Length: 232
Image 1 (cartoon, one colour):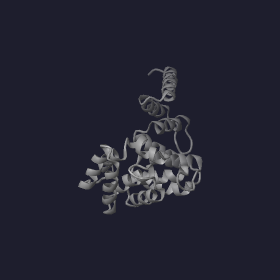
Image 2 (cartoon, helix red, strand yellow):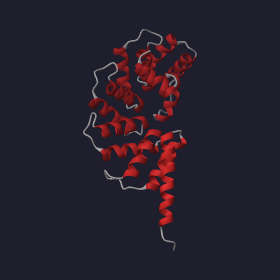
Image 3 (cartoon, helix red, strand yellow):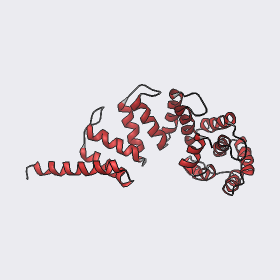
Image 4 (cartoon, helix red, strand yellow):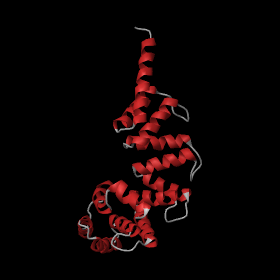
């Protein structure tokens, strides 16, 4: 299987068909049309050839969820031989229809250089579009680009803004990094160990062992600091 499809379908969504149902809510779709719903059922039943045709027909009528799923099936070679050119075309259609997850996946394709020449600047454009819609993974990707100066000039202040948004959206990595910004201060961020501790606690609650250690260390530091304060 091709890497972008594995990421977009398996790691992020389970299957492209299952993703269609979840995305209907997250993308503000009022209705997933009957043919897309039927395609979802056929995909889940393993009838990939039938699902492929149904996704195609719904995609051709402009359903952006179907466009995304059809693209993923083409890229992944499910129900047909892999067709990267067609897969990219339909993924772009979904992205241009303002589907934030399609925008993120399309940006990641260019950020990683999968199926296309690597172009972080193009990736940045699509990450920004998705992030502005509240797509948490795009927010994290955008923050990483600002921190690294990849596809955009390096800007730690902007990186912090997007890490914090992703952290508030529940991303464990972003919670840890946001905690680090507050722990160290600088780049327009006022040092605040209590706030840092709260972000580390959130990441630790999701199983980040480094965040657990940071939470413990800051808790001890704050306790020592409190003991030094004169009693009133």
